[in-house]
Image (cartoon, rainbow, N blue to C red):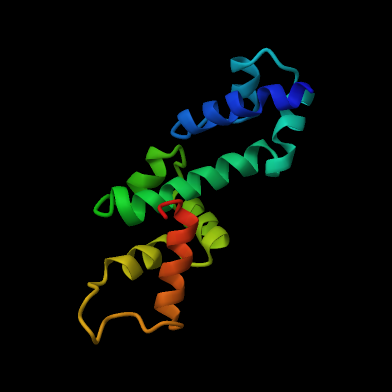
Length: 139
């Protein structure tokens, strides 16, 4: 099955090129000797090329915001991942994770360990922190 043959190489290529603002179907067509139909069928299970790329950029952004680059501006993180419009980035982030990127950063930047600031299990902050942590891939 041709789409299965290309799945891993294409996914690896996408991961390696998330910072390229032009990453998309045309980039994949230039990088792989596959037809447009094969590329679409290969990425169909992920919701399509554009959705996969955006989702992976947002997931990578979450990891950077929370763990890898917590001091880096949200605009710089977006640009680093090939998203030049920071407003568009914030809207997409909120659609995907349910909170704006600044709120996600704030929830994780508050000090832990002080009894009055520890999240109470079931509280909004505790739920947000758990959900964001699970979605980030840093389990």
